[in-house]
Image 1 (cartoon, rainbow, N blue to C red):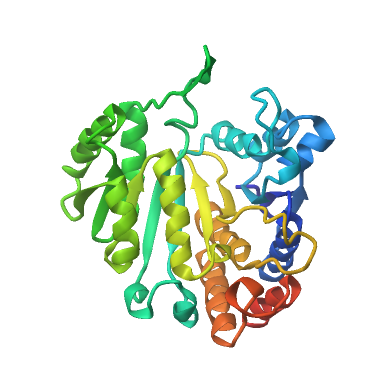
Image 2: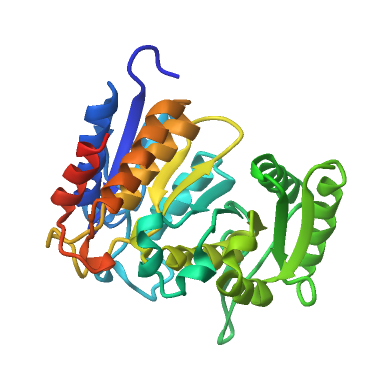
Length: 343
């Protein structure tokens, strides 16, 4: 930890990223003294430097106490050319370069938004789960390419990678870890199940159950309140955490944290860059503000400030705050002011 003011690298990124990052700056200015420095990442970095993540920015992130990210991506950088830079490479490069192997996505619908969910109130009431997703292995990082008119992507997992993410899941579990795999088909999933079962043997107070990923996708919408911690590999976690996001009524509501064994964590909202509303003032900043709270808790050890922000978010929603994605008309700026007023 930097003596005095913690040093936070802010990566606004693309689309609505700069707008919601401005909300995070306003929040941090209110809750404490921090050294904030902005850098380019994603499409903005491609336009300026020809790459989604420069070595200088990665070095700045490694030297920081925490990294706060807005969002990356946009249609102007979409391409099927495998050699062309893509904004998402910036995010993957950060995860790999900072050795962030665990992604934490809490799903706890605010009481004021239970009727905003596409599911019935009684189905989601009491939901308070955490998706723990492995970040640096699996098909996203395996060998890939094209050959003789075919394409291939390789999924690889080692025992070590599975052990360390399983330990994170059991660390945060209160009663049960649900491990999600595809062990009826995939050899990597069979190893996953074996290793997780071995870790569970040393966790007497925590139950373990296994679900195949297709069944897990169904159970997540049919009985979300029954889950505690969902543990899964990279691609399955990517898909299931976005499904879980909709339990809250809007993917614009969910924060996330990516952490490793050492060094700074990366904190970002689950939603994307939403280029269709960029610059309109309609972006929902609440997931960004929630991610800032997660940064204070998990990255900087400031539990009181984090809890205060989360309480302010709930109070603002209870007071009627609604952005367009929640059926209201509050602008990004108005939503930010409403949260600050409740601190």
